[in-house]
Image (cartoon, rainbow, N blue to C red; front, top):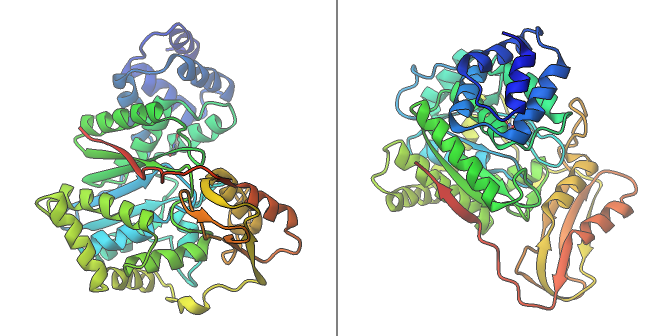
Length: 431
Ligand code: URA
């Protein structure tokens, strides 16, 4: 088989066979196929797409390029959740303990933040001593004992996806629906859960900008899941503004703890309840969604869920902080409105980029993070604003952030018109 024939076949819009897909995935992972040929094929896929069968074959090839995690030693149904990435998205920190407190097994491999989006591992590492590098044995033991473990993804999980993703990142071929679907699904399938909910974000702060694209991606991931015998449900949710109020590592841990105790922002609470209810029903721990919602509410009221979070922190070597003394910054600056009216927009991308530049995120893989900095929004879309009202509090450790404060102010659009709050859960796609 020759790579050039595969490139030409896809360039001319034809379907690739399993043998051809296996050939280029294996060849690229083993360094037998050079970047220039792989880039050319990726661009042909970008323009001509892949049908469902090809996407499933690609998922399988990526999955088989590395190890899979065997969760069979964990008793009960294993549940997993994955978000396509957003700003202020601390859902995993809340959802995991909530469903674990209700009897599900939450065995989660998470990633770090890159660019304007945050990552669960960075948020957890803002807690002193928290260890995300668990051996497979302690990961499995911990999930068996307390229902939850959140650890870093090892390099042996879908290594072909890692290599291809890095190439896509620099060749303009990330936003291809079959490539995104097979990339996400290969990692989810390798992680071994029985029930999977995918949170597909749409809006300015997300990969998918339109509802049509988000639906197409979701349908494809549900279909790939089915091909591999897994129940996958996709939630399509709003990322036109940040989720919750807090953006920044320690600030998000605090908001997650507040939500676990039932005192979180409405949007975050709702998203965690709804995804959590799907996971509990999928894991056959609740007969219907309404019962599952009640179980979740009870786990918050009894503080069982926040106790699970604390137990996880201790098991993974962390020291649960006193949340009143957790943040250490030089200053908190209030960004105030220069207009009055209603908030029409809080640009998630601008807020995410500002938080990153304040030090909460990385521009390069090895950048150090300042866990204490970030923003807490005081107004969200649909809120009424008077002149001089605080729009956001900025937690800062840098010297001069005058320009940054202007960007943050500019992220808010205030109008005299009435503004409806955007729907949070736009659609749910399941088999
Ligand atoms: N997240 C992934 O893991 N892969 C993609 O291709 C896009 C988002």
